[in-house]
Image (cartoon, rainbow, N blue to C red; front, top):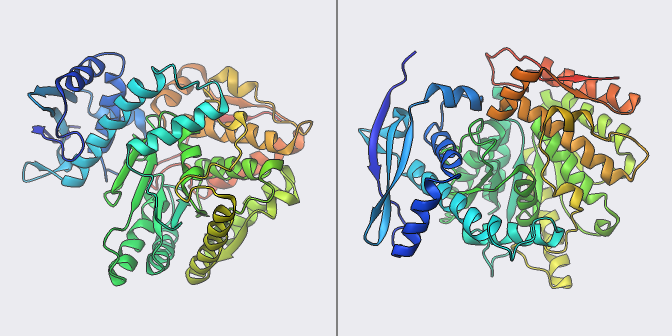
Length: 456
């Protein structure tokens, strides 16, 4: 099948509009080095916004002739795109939001390479070094705003959800917008788009002129979860671990909507952090919510958490079903406590420095067959470290489901094998089977082929 494409040359707006010759030279050198493939793939994902595709490998194969090149100008740059998806253009002109996202990709990938990974001042093997890197990436993207009271709500949930669940995310977003709250999500469709869409209406009614709709993604997932058009601040983090840390460092509350393996990964990540003894007294509002039809889903999640991480983990969140106003009110109350705590401790409102994150949650996990097979999913360790191991298992499943590299690994070497204590494996198998039965692993209309095998 042939897909319509367009060739175009586009100019940046804002910070990348005026660059020195040295900066342009650095961009040119980097773009044609090892970074070019990453930049090309992320750029293609941005241009494919709204396609309804959640398979990174399929996207790359669909537009295999796509190219993006940097053109040098006296005081800046332009981007030349060839064989770009035609849906990114209107009457031959690129949609402005997509244009902004495209240059956000360029900004972050090149900044991370030049100023983070190639900079000896950042020790990414050290916990403080990782947090410092996350801070600098977010600051470079102009996400950290001092002198602003806490109001950023992180919303997690699946890209593959029912129409009823999607409408509910919009209702919650609307109630948050009426209360002046900004939204941060994983930037994709489904439960990542709905809260933003609802908040835009709430903000408009309250005449909030500068509402923020932040999208955090990373190169491996962006092709499967292309930025939705409402995102007005897009940031590309280097990997999933730094993406997750960015969420919990800048967010003041977290709402979890129904989702699949990726949502389970996010839940386990945050609970594992909150279960660390150093975070025992730190306020962090966490709410699970959905329409009445999602009550059984959250009951399954709650049972899995109770059976694996225990009752202390269950105390760190509340479940609210079919009540958007109650959710929004609970978030506002929780954020008020966060503000009081940080004011008392002298912590920044825009970045949660006091939150302790164990290195096990920061170390990048490569979901190879060997690494998945060797996960230590056992009870003979502190509960927050068990959460870290479970998080990695779900992260690997996400990779096998939607990431190009993971899909190819499954095609070449077969299913991931996940080992662990028998009772935990039984619980995990039951939970994953429910995700499959409820069509939470892939977008509707696509048959799901499991990428994993639970070894009991």
